[in-house]
Length: 475
Image (cartoon, rainbow, N blue to C red; front, side, top):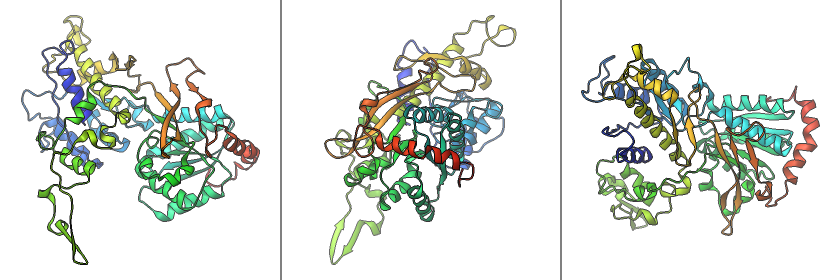
């Protein structure tokens, strides 16, 4: 959210991009709930919480586009409505392949690569290292099921086999976690691919530790390769995860953004309704006006303890939190590209010359009063250079071409896991050269630079896997 605000303010201060035009914004919290998201979409379209179909309740306000949502399920719900009215929607994190269907979602775009690419990268890694026998875990939602099925087909195409496919529950079923881990222990597959997000896979990782499952090489998808799990991995548990190879979004450096975050303060930034809650999370405190009577004082053997109050004087620069950690700004790069894509499309719309326009009789759209389908036309053809110097544009499916960093989980001198960049995937490269890996930089499970553990498991059981694949359970 702050990334979108930062990008909009930056554009408004740029004299060469959309001169004499000021971009504004309205922010709605979907609460990860589809009905709430749809209600928000109707509010954006009509300009009022009470939706009146085909009426704009706000004068002198033109809705250009909608940035979001993050999760694929919410984006799908939003795209169903926005597509009817042809309002451009640009998601920065939704990756489910079905959103590329322009018949169903004619006005949906995304700066996040489709999972089709993510599956391709993982298959390329399997091929590169010569693994023949792999296990698959996937979230029990459309994202996971679709990704796992695409991966299975591609893996079999290169002559490897999927030993098992297990679905990760999203309802915190301890019984199911135990069942999955028990199956992993019995399987001969030493390489495991997990299509998941941090919220869903963390309980499974905890069960892996509890059942002491070691000597596995994990391949992590973008949704969990650099986030939540590391917050719960203790030093004594690093042996389980050392050697993990993950896909991440490329990291871009955007000058001024970290300082912009440092300046946020619930006392000064009164118009930000979200910062107070964030403040409590960062500093482990609670605002006095929110503290309930029963939480003010707790009695324990006549000892009284007062919970720490937030003051608003806490220093964000001294906080050890992912919110201000510039190594965590990967998603913001996608948000930045989404906002700039809209701005450049608006610039193209504004630059139109009457008589040479793309609409009926060579007409142009009015930048101050255009129809959503008119901006949609320009979104499909927009091209711009992003912060990394890369030319960006949407393909015929509304997708950006995929770029990923390949990272390796390694233990540093302090005994904690860090991410080390060991390669890259760039879909723009010549066929056969999209993936580059620096094998000499990889630390494998067990803390060695040799791939013996993972390769041994793949080669030893490849013949068994091919013979038993047809009748194997879970395939």
